[in-house]
Figure 1 (cartoon, rainbow, N blue to C red):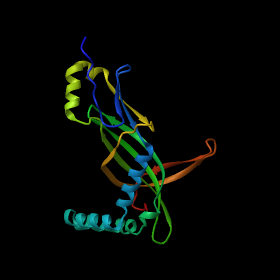
Figure 2: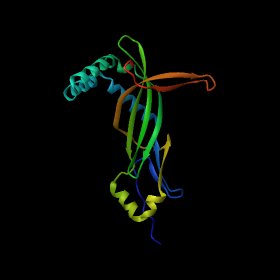
Figure 3: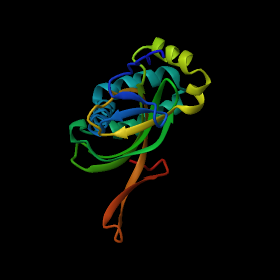
Figure 4: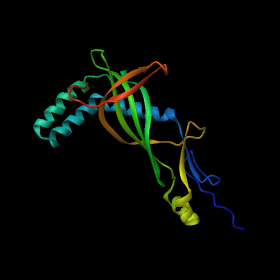
Length: 200
């Protein structure tokens, strides 16, 4: 009987042949740190300046003036005042190569006058499962159709061996947001307010 080949996946990932799962362990603290850093970078004066410069080259003047008017308010915030209130994973897209975590993040950020603004932002986090593409093809060769039909990806959070994730895409559209108190649950729950010209 041939010995089973051992497949090394990226740190924090392993194959569970018993229940046909490719298990990925994630650290929620790492996710929060990545998102917080991305938002602070997005609100930094340097980033805002670059965005405005690029927009001025690509957009008609009327549209650019509208963006400029909105950005003037956003520029005048202090990124160091940013506090993340809640991160909610809305949707997870998984395939044989990796996964996307679509996160809705709610945060408070203060303007230069010290007034707090409650905002929401959508961010996509991406990670690779396979340390080497060759390993994926080797496993596919050994398991053939069984790999595609039987194996599924399962995400675990805060297990002792976590998978490193990286920020690949940031969707930087801002949304107005509000905190509502639900007496029966004894908690505040954030929600996104549809975007209007008066937001922020």
